Image 1 (cartoon, each protein chain N blue to C red):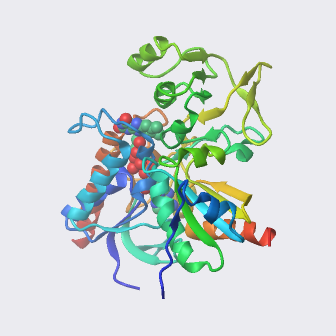
Image 2: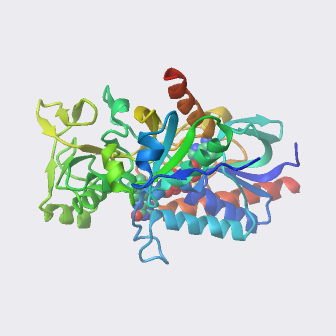
Image 3: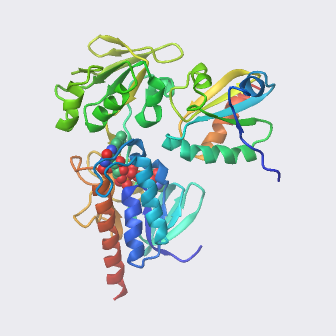
Length: 112
Length: 305
Ligand SMILES: Cc1cc2nc3c(=O)[nH]c(=O)nc-3n(C[C@H](O)[C@H](O)[C@H](O)COP(=O)(O)OP(=O)(O)OC[C@H]3O[C@@H](n4cnc5c(N)ncnc54)[C@H](O)[C@@H]3O)c2cc1C
C-alpha cells in the first residue's frame, strides 16, 4: 500500500489545500508543547491511512498562529472538518481511535 | 492465550511506571497497560519538587520514567483496560483493543481525571473557551481575559502561568481563603494582573459561538474569553468495582500501609487510592508504586511455598 502523507498546512498552502479545496478536509491542530497532542497525532495519522476520500492535514498552531486565530482555536488538540472550504464540524481533545473515527465520519455523513 | 503474567499494572503514570521498575527488578514477569502521555503530570509545565530534578516539565519527567521502565525490560502496552475479572487463581483483564491478558496479581494505578464544573452547557464550550489543561491552552489567551476556577495549588499555579501572557486573570474560589501553598499565595497577592474573587461559583456560561461571559450564582457577571477549570480530580472507580475492591466515600481505593486492597493479590498506588487528604504528588505516587510491587512480590513468593 502506498502510504498517504498527512499534509502540513501553512500560510502558503492554506488557500489552495483548504479554502479552495473541493471536498472534505480534516485538520489536526496541534503544538509541540501539548501532551494530549502527542497521543492524538499518531491516532490521527493511523486514521489517515484507513479512511478514503477525505484529505487529512495538520496545523502546527505555534508556527501558523494566524491560521489558528482565524479558526478561533483556543484548545488543542482541536480537529476541524471543512467541506468545500467551509467548516462543517469540530471536536476537541485526545481520544481513542474508534471514537475519533466515529466523530469524523459523523460529520462527513451529515454533510454529504 | 499466552502464559500468565506475575504482575499486571493498570496505569502508566508515576505510580504505575515505578511499580513496573520494581516488579521487574523482583524478577516478576511484568506488564504495564496505560499511556504515559495521559498521566496527569503532563499537565504540569514545571515540576520543581521531584528530587534529582531542580526543574523539569511534567512531560519530560514522565518520558524519563518511561525510559527507565523500558531500560529494565518492562512490557508496556499503550492501551486502555476496559474490564477486569477474577477467574480462579488468576485475573483476566480486557483492553480496548480486545486483548485478553491473564495475571496473578494486579496493581491499580489509574490516577484520576479532572473534575468538571458541572454547569448545564459546559460541554458546548469545551474547545470554545472552557479548558481543563492550562499547559495545553494557556498560549491561546495572550492579551485576553480569563478566569481560573479553584483555590488549590494547581488553580493558583494556573493563574500565575496565565498571568504571564493574559491581560487579566480572575481566580474564582467558592470559599473565603485560598488553600494553596503560602509561597504561591504570596506570588498571587503581589501580581497586579490577578484578582481573586471569593465565595464565587459559576452558574452559567454565556456566548454565541465562543465563550463571552460567565454568570456567578450571586448574580454578578464577568466578561471572560476563557475559563480554566482546576477544581481537583476524581478517580474512576469502574475497574475497582469490577474486581470487588473497596472504595471510600469519595471514590478512592482503600489500601493498607503496604498498598494491599481488600481483595487478595490486588494492590493500588498513586492518586487513585488512599484518603482524600493524602498528599498526591509524583514522589508519593512513585513511592506507593514501589511498595505495591513489593507486596505483589511477597505474596507470590508466599504462594510458592
Ligand atoms: C496541573 C498539575 C500540576 C502538578 N504539579 C505537580 C508537581 O509540580 N509536583 C508533583 O510532585 N506533582 C504534581 N502534580 C500531581 C501529580 O501529577 C500526580 O500526583 C501524579 O501524576 C499521580 O500519579 P499516578 O501515577 O497516580 O496517576 P497519573 O499520573 O494520573 O497516571 C494515571 C495513568 O493511568 C492511566 N489509566 C487510567 N485509566 C486507565 C485504564 N482504564 N486503563 C489503562 N490505563 C489507565 C492513564 O492513562 C495514566 O497513564 C500536579 C498535577 C496537576 C494536575
